[in-house]
Length: 121
Image (tube, rainbow, N blue to C red; front, side):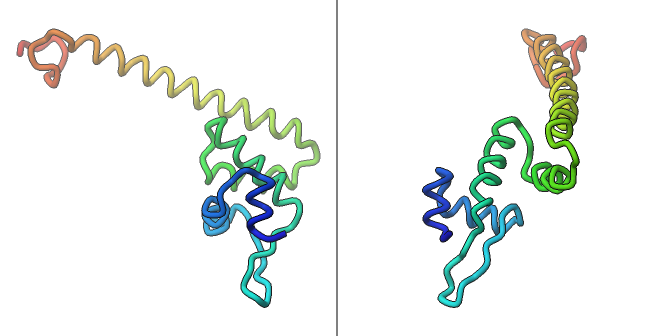
């Protein structure tokens, strides 16, 4: 299918599809007239990419995990494992943000919030 049809079926812009193609997430072959031709399975794959991005996965993670999933005997189990890994990353980031919030809160009203907490301003 040509890029316009793929865009219509996925809700992505042509530019987004071209970007995904440039970074290697989707591959279309070039026809003699120069148009891109994408396989039908590109629709499901691009929907997966969009969902994975919405769940906080980077494009690099999506590319890596896509390859892992293609070779997995049980994709449901493999996806669950990926989600569990991502939950650990999110939990760690939340802890970092909570510590940062505490540090910022300790500096409020110190006169100079850029000085270390507890030192006079």
